Image (cartoon, rainbow, N blue to C red; front, top):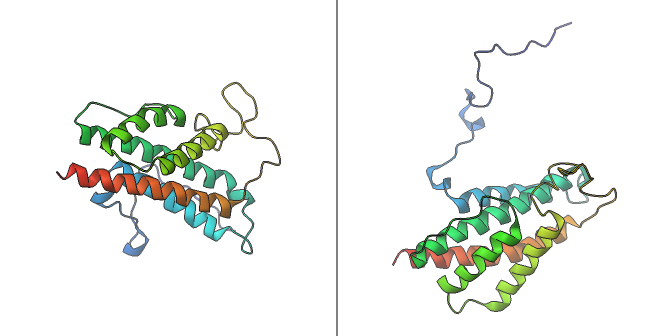
Length: 191
């Protein structure tokens, strides 16, 4: 019976390329910015929801990674918008080094209204509501990654449920606002 042999220590595991070029994933130069990073997480979550939505395979095993990917998309997008707003306004502003969505939002919201005067308050209010919902579910970006918090307590209770198709539809509202803001800020940066 053949035995599994581990790779030799001098072989690379994650950076080794396949001889079949189609198997190699490439990070294009255009993807080295906050919004492109965020888009990668968003796309991965959307793809997982599409694959694991009934009547396909049940989504139970994918719930935590999907919610983490959506939350991380939101966090990275908000942080990227802080940088974009600061550029447009000509001020110094850096995103918080922590994962607290409420803190990130409280830093972004005033910058966004200054950088994009006349913004649709209704959509910004909707975005704030959704940021708050994610913050309640996962205040430190740990809930969907680890079963227990730093205090040793369970982060989620057994039986926690969400409708993944509804989450994906809700995320479309977030995409709409964040993508529109990023696009408008990009236009303003060009001037």
